[in-house]
Length: 203
Image (cartoon, rainbow, N blue to C red; front, side, top):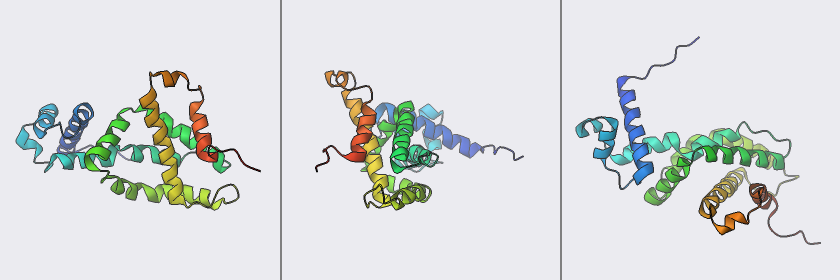
């Protein structure tokens, strides 16, 4: 039986800094948060924070590698089962959406990354995740009988696009008259559109 690793004092301080910064970023955004605010919230002197991080962006870099929704959600796909590609995509979509629903802060983090950093950290995350996720989508892509000839990388990208576009538009219409017109199973319909398109099959 292995003993649980106890964080060092340095690691505990870094965790406190990152947690304080994360909460402030979620509340105020990246640009509106100062290093002084982060230090105060973490219970440190301003000079003490620079013993661990050279800049506010370096703190954000550490946070994004640990907490970005891509890193949290994609590994869940590895455990999704499905006898057919259709069953897999449906189960994966519901699993991922369920995780997003538990963590509304994910979307704020994505916006900060996209708007204030032009997505420059995402490539680092994908470099770490892709080797684990790629085999799943490679296997799906190999089932050409029921799939169009789409490579695994594009399958991953299109699946993520479907998932986050639904989540984003759901946030936009929540509480509006349009939301009242949505059927209860709107997400299943959204997945249907992803799988089969919007046009009826022509004879």
